[in-house]
Length: 434
Ligand code: GDP
Image 1 (tube, rainbow, N blue to C red):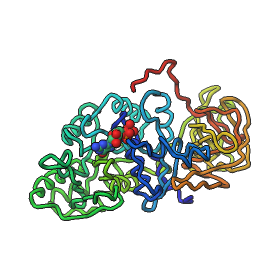
Image 2 (spheres, rainbow, N blue to C red; image 1 turned 180 degrees about the horizontal axis):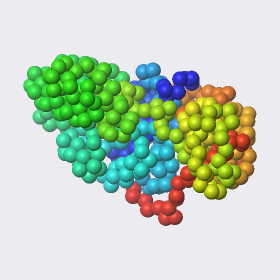
Image 3 (cartoon, rainbow, N blue to C red; image 1 turned 90 degrees about the vertical axis):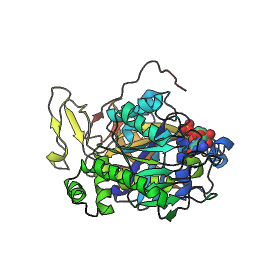
Image 4 (cartoon, rainbow, N blue to C red; image 1 turned 135 degrees about the vertical axis):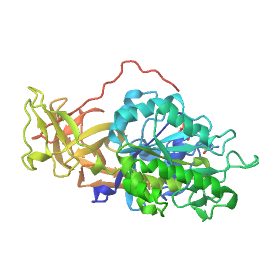
């Protein structure tokens, strides 16, 4: 586990049913080397759907959070409910993420659930990127989907890649790769490699004018967020890729833009660049705002160990509002977001927002007014390795063994420094959209 928490990306992949969430997830795990075989949804060999080893060990590995390395970061891929049947469950998982990739079908575009999820991600302030998938499908239309993302979602996507060709192999100009508008290169993905290899080529002459126009648009869009970039653009000076990356990252972290990428998850096209973008542009947990909650003891107390500044307090009578920064030195607080059966009992998945959670310790559940035992802490890697940890720090996600009476949505915190995190309202009836 990296001790440098800036190297963590708590990521969720969200989509309307059938847009390709499972396929994107599978390809990411495969391309990262965490999984040796690329599962195929249609053959029922995806990790999520059918995994003999997983079943044998009694762990639904992929249905809470798996960690895998990419470049120099660790991606914690958090399962968000595949199909938006359970709005409350989606909301709960959105609270746990620091960033999301919203997958759109290149043919169907913005669908009902894409709209719902986009709204929810706005509500929770989740920085995000868009991935237009299925560009190899008959009838795929990149520009129409882009227009829908802008119009229907009132979003501010910035196009970082454009497709080369569109549609299946039998059409005149089939989809065969992408143009990276920052590096101004064409990226193709050799058949049979399922996305594990990228071939970088010069942009063919007949595509150069179009690619330059898209790049100009990208730079123009980004000028809104950087004076330095604006100056260089006005001078028609060369714009360093490093500056573009910085501006994109900054505007994404501050939820001003959504980088837009594209490809075909089924063929592994665009998955490596997508992972690069997740590592480069989505925020680390240290960059997230403090979490807020109520002081269940009735009056806000100062943080004895940390500085007073670290714990902001606002006296409002009996229920003072307090907040906790994503800092390992703050008092511990976290949220139980999923409970799954594990070898010797239930594994409670907890997002740690502040402080440090130690194995073999006791924590307070302020909602239930009970103390709970934390016996063991587990991290599950996508490579199927399980790792027992002594402690986890603010920003990370961990499976806890030993809790008994806590339920999904409960706050856990330091017994001496309680905080009750804002709860999520659960609708009484949930309408399935599947
Ligand atoms: P989910 O419901 O969002 O998880 O979508 P799936 O990943 O299960 O994909 C739904 C269907 O679309 C499956 O039959 C996939 O094989 C197919 N699919 C996913 N991505 C692509 C793609 O890029 N191109 C094509 N042609 N099919 C895809």
